[in-house]
Image (tube, rainbow, N blue to C red; front, side):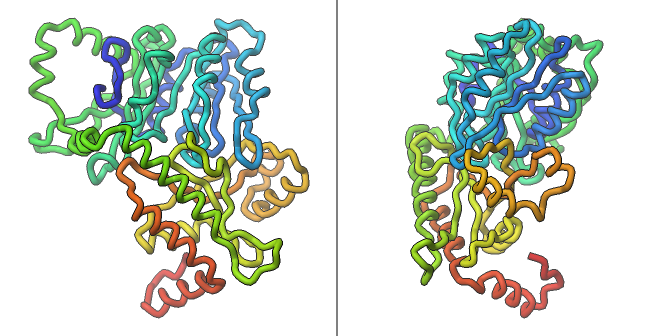
Amino acid sequence: MAFMNISEADYTLVFIANEVSAFKLVAESFQFQSNGELLTVYDHRSEALDAMMEACKAQGAHILSAEFCWPRLGIKYKKLKKMIMSKRDKRKRGLFVFPLHSRVTGAPYSYVWMSLAQENGWHVLVDACAFAPKEMDTLGLTMFKPDFLICSFHKVYGENPSGFGCLFVKKSSVSAIKDSANNPTSLGIISLLPAFRQTQDLQEIEVVSVSEIVELQTSLESTPSRRGLSSVNEIECKGLEHADSVGLIQISCRAKYLINWLVNAMMSLQHPHHPQTGISLIRIYGPNINAHRGPAVAFNVFDWKGEKVDPLIVQKLADRNNISLSSAVLQKIRFFDKNEEEREMGIESRVCEVKERERNECGISVVTAALGFLTNFEDVYRLWAFLSRFLDADFVEKERWRYMALNQTTIDI
């Protein structure tokens, strides 16, 4: 909790197997009033958010979502404000789920939304999974103090499993959690065990509810021997201690410089020998160069004909070059230009399911790159150099034939 800069006097900590488990656990534990609402602010599809919405729907909650303006994907301000400040009884408001920036596009979101939601009777869940572990020092929790906070240590600890999640519950918000006797059990709660124990670092424990955990921690805090016991099971966090030695300010500044250098370098890639109305190799989705953007960028690669290269192909070729990229689907986008909407969504029409088109929920598939707190310039330069290879019109076909020549049993890229 010290590494996350969160006070033990204000919050209870629950270790969770992963982000999906954390979101689902909050949804199952939260006590929605009659006709309560779940309001989310996500510009992309999320497995964790989908699990939460399904659990909330099962309780009769209404699902509301913010919308985002094309092409920079800023929040559609008036619509979100209207949903937050609706005239319905504040006591029947529900849960406002808010990330401080998009983990896919890097678009930053203002703290004002969290404050506005609190003033209008919403319980607030802050999604800090897009933050690096040491960035939590910048959250300013003493000012806002959300009811719930979820963060992730994925790819920070261990090899398999490769990390865990943390769910923080504000102690003064326990009344919003269902009573233990009526709360359905929730999978995914874990305990961290010292390395000298002959067992895995992460292990499933008996399934309990969030309210039971809060009650347990409260009783532990009133036990005189608690401090002595915690010093037997102290866990060393060498990676985070290294980050401490480097310094939060240097890490944050480096991440901002690196992501903005990468965005600028990607935008400079142009297909050669093309007319003046030429086509850029890379199209950025979300903010361009911005001092406040998060350490992630969403983009697509386009060939010299203007056709999009399948994001899964880009991802797989990057993996073969030891570069870690992900794919995602942007959603809840509103276009001001109808022609631009038809052009963008026309590209996606081949991969959209019929039901999604009927509901006007067909998203835009993208490639996304995220920087970690130990990312350096060599890493982002290698990514840029890899993407520049797509300027060769035959790059994808060359890769296909190269793997056939190596007698690969699988040629699928």
